[in-house]
Length: 143
Image (cartoon, rainbow, N blue to C red; front, side):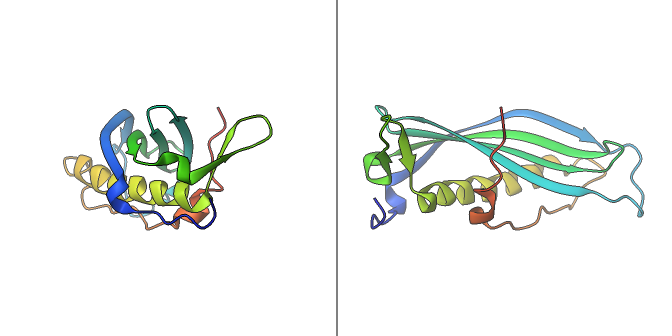
């Protein structure tokens, strides 16, 4: 698994679902301090060669002013078996580089979606920061 190359042509993003959106832009001023956080969950269906990346993106003040998005990204991965190994309990352990690649694609796409959705709000023109997908691997959301 460690030596397997990620081939972009074998990754197909086939569905995006904006599960929930929260936008509170009522009392924005120049002193507003927003804190950014992002977390993820990963789901899979090995038989269908599918992986779902759930992203939870928050840009909020202490007064809950800001935005929150939960967006799901559904992928079909040709030759998915090349990107994981089964542990002693037959649970798949995916390559960190593989999951980081999917998180990077998902977050980059989410940045564009969120930018577009904010155009009719007081957050118009706000661009989310660029975040390392490898750092996002450490931000798994606890359910």
